[in-house]
Image 1 (cartoon, helix red, strand yellow):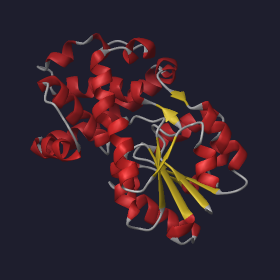
Image 2 (image 1 turned 180 degrees about the vertical axis):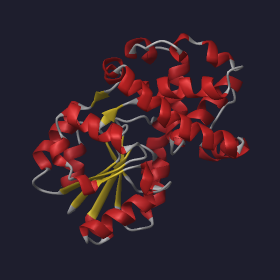
Image 3 (image 1 turned 90 degrees about the vertical axis):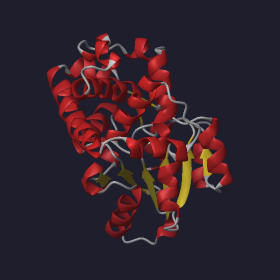
Length: 260
């Protein structure tokens, strides 16, 4: 392995509470008649601890690994509002396809507008919704001299660079190795661009993500794929990852599995 490429949310950043809070505000903005629009989080600064025990949040996190980008948060909230069971990726994709394209486009755009407004209008409340995975962050600091590090994320660059600085690891990632949502919809586009920038064969690259569908998107390129089991996935995703031959890493064994 000569390059270690990482997703951001669910791998470095414990960001689900923030995604949920901003997604809920976005959903309320686009569907004001929804019963979810009456929730206090839509107008007040949410508390991370309270969110984590909220049944709606737990449902959100359970379905979230089946999505790809910000508009998928709107799909997840629509599913939860209608109380539709989702067994697997196929079931989720069918429900996503049933959503009006204009809703998905508007959700994607408005989500990032509201995130920016939140982060700039009340930066302390915004930052309190984020955490990190200290064991993994310390591993990155130890291994930065052994391997080239890069990010392939569906998040916006503004938020990523700000959080990397907050986590104290911004110096580990060169600016041209932070590939954000503007690169493309699929992580395949991110990996192709990183391979080009680093001038490496795909076989020398390991990609770590907390979503199996992202690993599926890049596996055909020939990169080594690893699922971050400390992210927002569960037994469903971990079992599927093993079945497909991907590494499944936990915080206690991730360094050994990646570098052995």
